[in-house]
Length: 279
Ligand code: PAF
Image (cartoon, rainbow, N blue to C red):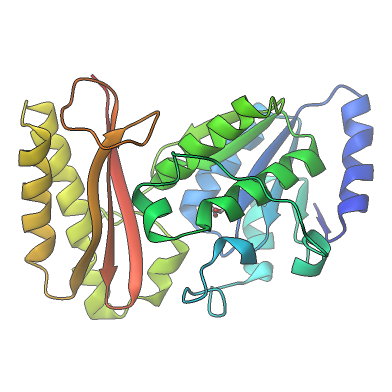
């Protein structure tokens, strides 16, 4: 496994494999890898000749009051996890390598106006820009994303479609701790008490999913989920919404594919979770 910091070097290395007709799988990450990332990397390993994991904390997807400065990082332990799974390249550039004299961004209309896009202005512009750069730099055939960031997956799929980027976007299931908490690098911010409180997210998600499957309406599902989260003292709801899975517009019924998504502050830590309901 090779750790590469330069765009030119990665391009040169991957070009050789492309010329040999080898397929390239990309797993875009911001590092501090956990079992959720490992599941994406294993899938990429199984489906491609060459696997690239990008390990880059993308500064332009963080708002001015967000956690960029304290976002956890540990390239050594990330390297070990990648090596164990059989990754070929870790791409870990400095911010100055990815962005200098930047004037061009990739942005998306409408789909970023709801959920995390509404709460984190500029976030998806940063995500779309860095992902487009990573797709161009690697020339990957497939890219793997976790469904925990379901809005991100829907948006990236649309960017790839709209800009005719020749890459397949592969969504992968949410990975959870045994007690239900969805894995996230941000779980590391939680104190012991907050970690316990954070279970209100998965409890609300599981209950909401059961209710949706057994025929409850969107408003019944959302109000039960709100009740579960509000009963937790340390929790503060950022949003709870049901949206159309492809447009990200608010949905009033379950007459189509829906994303039911939540963002909740546990203390200062903002966590997200969701379920997808398919008719
Ligand atoms: O999901 C993430 O970790 C990031 O948003 C991504 C896709 C790596 C872009 O920085």
